[in-house]
Image (cartoon, rainbow, N blue to C red; front, side):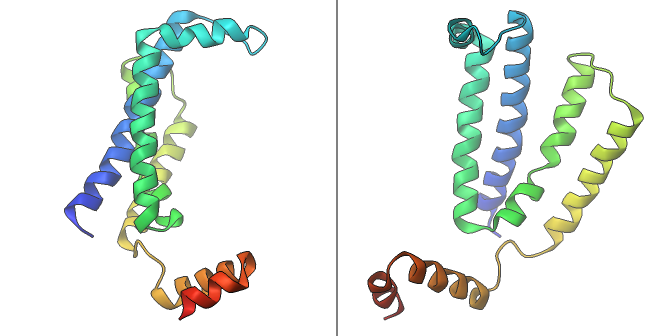
Length: 150
């Protein structure tokens, strides 16, 4: 993988962690909102913490879509799940949330799983991917698949 691809994966982790954290801080400042009070929920967007969180989550989705264009979902999602560890650390130290030992164990297992995923290939081998593509094209339109195969 290239440096840019590692940068995109890091962006996914950082933007999702920061976006979730800022969104949580903003919503805690606002207090309880409900789907029954839709106007209050929509007005919560005016909170600067919520707005910043939403913008960072939009950056996350941009990086996420980019990563999915060149790597398998089964690689991207676990490889970026180190964000769960970062969110837990931020929640514990910044928001003073109590995290049970069972949760810490689960977070440690996620971190260990990231190591296993990162050691494998980021893309399914070409012969398997081409079979998937031709099958999906055949299901959509026989005319399109004939053009693609030629």
